[in-house]
Length: 438
Image 1: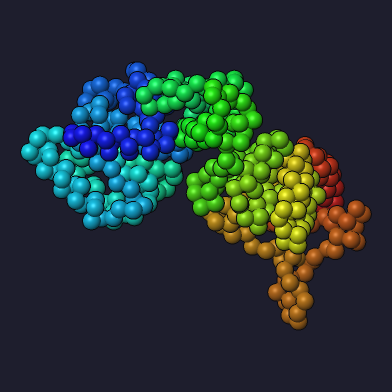
Image 2: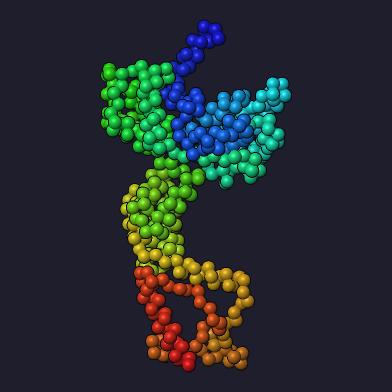
């Protein structure tokens, strides 16, 4: 490297943000993902045996997917090439694959191809990778923040190992921040910085497991302070952290995960968890109509007759949200979610319709008993459409007649909430009807 090239490289290094400068250079420096990267775990064993093969990295931003891909190239002595599915197309992809073929033929060295946001490639683009992945010409490392079972071709998935990245823990983030504070070559170690424990805790807690965000907040706080030495307080940390991104994408995988968490929290009768997931969705810009519709469905599916007030409340919530909109309708949503979560639960009505429809689909159709058939036309008696007994003519409005023609039960009310009374009432009705029939 000439003196000018060295000068340019040094300038580029200085221009890099702290998060880029602090990227781990070895596996020993990599923090997090111990469940598959710690000594003795699968990915580490594959590397040590030189049997890496193609892999898919799936997980949230800032958890080390790109960094680990580069480290894998170093550890496996492979030629590293990187593409972004957002900005690169088939042309660039074919060029990289052609170069990989030349490299393995001329030097016997494989190419590790890192495709960021691989879910953005369509089926045809993903299919281009298959032959070279199968032949081992390239070691594919695909990174995605979306569920690969929804977004990556089955053919490509079947030829790759899947490793799921998890949000970094608070302790992981603290370790990364401490490394940045003490590193004199790439970090902030040359500066006199006194970091308060609560400030460090605040940065680690508010970055949502994203190392990039934590390091960026640290750098903003340090560079915006002209004191020497720098006393980094929790107030500085709060000022340095931008508005939190909730990790909710209305069109992405998190959308389905968070609404699933909301519904399951309500079903599980945990109003605190339910209100948290509601807040996550509102902060992420979720459509209010979508939330209201799901609450209406839930009111019938999971509460039903255990609390018959649940459904009209959910419907009223949807109507109120349409009338007043955000931000005020968050109050209505909060009232409804906490009520539904606290209500007694029953899926008896849900089970009843599923069981009845299954019978309709799979068993011989039950003929309508003649006494229940329409008798409001001339000639109905000639067809035998008679014998119906008007329920209100009998005590307790219970007529001694069969309404189905076969012995089948579908609705089994629980002993929770108002269904307890329904259960007792149905038992009384069945007993009275049997007495009258006899």
